[in-house]
Length: 403
Image 1: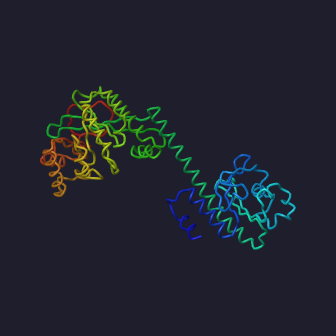
Image 2: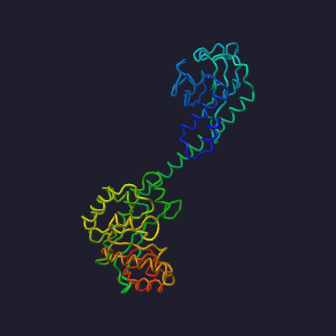
Image 3: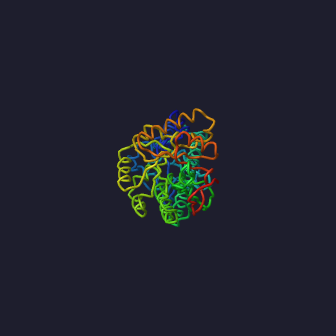
C-alpha cells in the first residue's frame, strides 16, 4: 500500500507501472488469488493488468472474453452486485460457463468510470474458494481505487487528444504555409546603412499565440524541425526583394541545423547572402553531429551566427566549440548599457574576444540613441533593435534613420 501511495503522488511514474501497482496492491490488501483491471472493448472484456497466478485458469494480460458472458459486464450494468460471496451456490452465476472456467468461488468487482461518464472497464478480485471475510468496506475500498484509475485514464485520454489536436494544428500550418515572415533590419551602427535583416515568423491561425509558443508546441509534438524549415523556406522565397548585398538571417535550432532538409532549403538561395542563427535555449548534448553540420554550412559558403550571447546557454565554451562568424549580444546585455558599467565591461570583453578570432558582433535589442552610441564606442559595429526598426513586412530601406 505504501508503494501505491508513493506512485499516486508521483508526476513521473509510467502509466503501465502505476496501474500495475494499483492492481497488485488491491490483491495484497484483500488477499485475493487474482486481481485484475479489465477494459471493455466493443464486444470483448480484455485483461489490461493482472496480479496473481493467471496461468492456472489460462488467463494472462491480453486475454479476452466475450463481454456479455462475464461477471464484470453484468456487474457494471447492474445485473449483478459488486460482491458475489459464494459463486458456486448463487443461482445468478453458478451455471455460467465462466464460473467454472475461472474457478470463481468469491467475486468482488467495481466498474471503472471515466470523468466523462463512460465505463472504461472493471476492477476485480477473484477467489478460488468461498471467502466469507469480504465485507462491504472492501467494496468501498475498491471503489476508491477504481476512481483513481478512472481519473488516471481520463487524464491520459485527455493528454492524447490534446497532443492530437496540437499535431493537427501544427501540421496544418506547415502544409498550408499558414504563417508569414517579417524582417528586422540589421545595420552598421556608425553609418546606419542596412547590412542584413533577421526573418521572424508570425502566425495568424487560431488560437492566436506568440511565435515562441507555436514553435515550442511544434517541438512538443515532433514537428519542430519541419516547422522551422517551413519558416526558413518562406523567408528565402523573399530574398530577391532584399537590397543588393544585404544578407538574410534565419533562425534554427541545433537539431534542425543537422537536417538534410534544411540544407536542401538553403540551397535555393545564394549562400553568401544567408546567415543561419542557431537559437540556443537548451543544452547541446552531443557536439559531434552538430559540428559536422556546421562544417557543412561553412563549406557551402553560408555563415553561422550564435544567438543570445550573454544569456542562456550561449556561453564562451559553447561559442568556442561552434566557431560562429557572427555573435549576437543578447538584449539583456545591451539594453541600458549606456549607464551600466558592468554591461559595458562585459560587452568590451566580447568585442576584444571577437576581434582576436575574426568574429563580427551584432548587438540586439537597441532601443535608444544612448545605447547605440555606447555600443559604437565600445567597438560594436552592427546593431539591431526597435531604434532601427521593428520586425515588418518587406521592403527594407538601404539606410535607416530611426524607427
